Image (cartoon, rainbow, N blue to C red; front, side, top):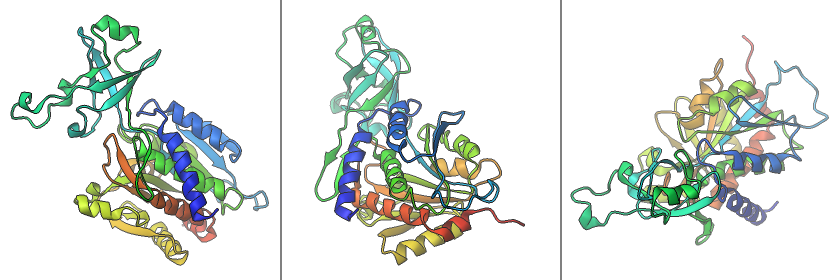
Length: 362
């Protein structure tokens, strides 16, 4: 597939996945879509005890069969959940209180949202305090904010099926901007999930060894899914694919913007396996895959949970750079998703990388 064709495929697939509702803890629409899309490529699909989706690909049929101990699978992990809200209480006046789950409170006022109740999808808007009513506070605390769904009483809201604990997504549709830039809710981490799926589809008949895609749950609410996924898969090593904002590296807005369009990020910190990272950089350089290297002091997200699972798992982290990270509307460059696919495909078909990842005998 040429670069233009891949960009079109990624854009269409990503738009479909970003439209799904998958707030942390309610990822089933996303996991069901992954299951359907990977059905023709998987040798097996299963759920672990935490309901992470595990998609197993055994590799070419003519590959010599080896024992499980000598041929453990490579795990590719991408979390399926998105940042969102949860309803906390329906007040007597029909307004709905919510929990913000770590979202920056500055981005919440006046946002259009959708409450996913047991019976309907109720649109609403987060009330915005006018500046002359906010006093000395720049933005009120989320615990004081309310969602207005147009109800005039608690009974009105409850006729919509709204109850405490309902997930709330942002009404931020997938939008194409100039060049290859796109904007949407849920790009973190539907971009990483889609890139991983597309890479596996492209090389499913030429894998250098067995691989398992783990579409993990609840990364955004405490990195809860990665550990159970790794314990179930018992991989030789893992590649974690995610989206990251420049502010995580301490960059200012201009520096963060300059990250876009420069390719997949091969991340490094002390928790990343140096041999896997060095091989990824070598492969990217040899094949002319656009990439960049950034580092910080602490490994995070699913990589932390996976790396510390069971007896320990070597981890490589690949990131897609984003602007407005962890807000209702992130922005990414599709060419960076394309380079992520290219590097993943190159590593998945690289026998040396698979051999490198296998545990050594002492």
